[in-house]
Image 1 (cartoon, rainbow, N blue to C red):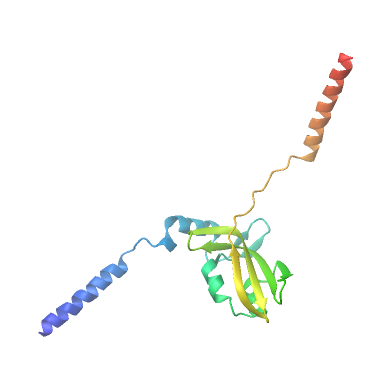
Image 2 (image 1 turned 45 degrees about the horizontal axis):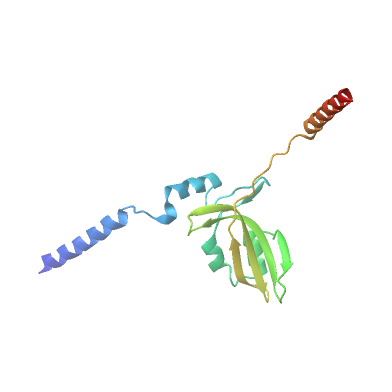
Length: 166
């Protein structure tokens, strides 16, 4: 009787151990996500944010929405830094805006230029809105001197052609 009891517990423990050690297909830790995090830096580490030279961590969208509600302004500023934009809500509240890279668990992607808005009522954070966005495309502008030289050459060629035609 005791042997059957020990055999049962040994088999249960071995089954649990074998399944817990097996690495499954976790959507939060896929290979593409790990490569993306390495390109941005660690989730908890610092990274360069766009070309402004700021060092900011990659934030998780779900953590922002659940953990920041109920915090006061000082706590939010300690965690996020000074706000990049402040405005009135139109009612009795006010908004603080930040641009930060945010990891979205649902899409398994890091959005590098997300808009995070904290709404404060009575000095406490009441809602957190996260608008997931990628950085805007940088347009390359031609050098002004070469652009002017090309236009002057084109203009002079047009004038020569028009004087020859007259």
